[in-house]
Amino acid sequence: MKKSITTLLLLAATMSLSAQTTGNTYFLPATAMKFHFLVEKTIYTPGELASYAQRYMKKADVKQEPYTEYRIISTKMEPIGVPDTTKQFQLSTDRRFSISEVQRSESGILLAINTQHPAPNTQSAPFTPARKKRRLNPKDFMNEDILTAGSTAKMAELTAQEIYDIRDSRNQLQRGQAENMPKDGQQLRIMMDGLDTQERALMQAFDGVADCDTTEVTIEFLPTQAVERQLLFRFSRHFGFCDADDLAGAPYYVSVVDERNAKPDETKGKEKKPKDELGLNVNVPGRIQVALYKEDLALEKYNLYAGQFGKTESLSPDLFGKKMTSKIILNPTTGAIESIKEEALDK
Image (cartoon, rainbow, N blue to C red; front, side, top):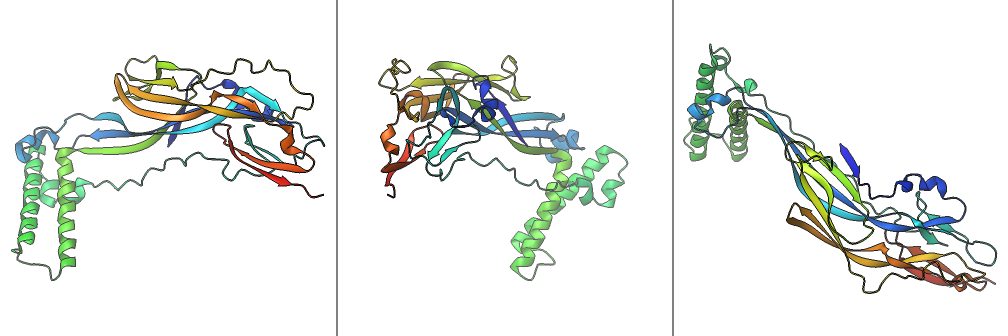
């Protein structure tokens, strides 16, 4: 099962952008960070004979009560593009410009002009958990004497004796001292595997069973400015992911450092637009550094380019003239130009 959590920092308007993008309207992307957390959930069930583990098996650490425990076993981040509502533009495709094709994503992000983006969907495939092994049932491996024992204490004693007999049989096979030795190595492996399975099943009656399930939780974070230790989520060993105000969970923070050397273009939007403006804009993304913390412990650091931390530039209408045209592919995550190719038009 895959869960998804989206932080409040993602613009709510992006939910309906696809419907708003009509005609030649498009968006440039803001670069969000999609964190993938693999979370292991362990459900422990005590064995029927757990209270006798110390007496018969010399195991003092066997738990007597059931419990459920969560832990994050891996963290991965991938940058994704989301429509930037502050960068909505109208592309002119009248006869003055040699534009025959405009490709946008489902959410309206501009992907390509006069060509198709080779990989418009760059997001990773969802996590698929491995198939769980069938749980062994200790009673399927108990003999008649164990199953008909008059008390739990007697049942524990006989089960322990059966385990010790299995171990003794395995040792004799390993030393070549068994009365009925197998004829070849394959038979030996089959016999050893059978003894291992019997012991593992019977030991569950003392040790109990820990069932583990791994799920993927994704959290999307949209950085908009430099921040220091901003709360991203909370996580509890006993409850898993928690609400931001639930103090039962340990806080996980995110910090963003803006590494741009130049200041943002303060004249953006104030310059006088030419009469024949094409309306084709691209991002020049800026570099940021993002760090993930668990309380005071630094966990991961990421360096990436983000469209919202750079500037926007308008492309010249001369790229789409009457004699020459251009094929342009944009990065769907940052809005930067990936490739541009000029071609002569047929006369």
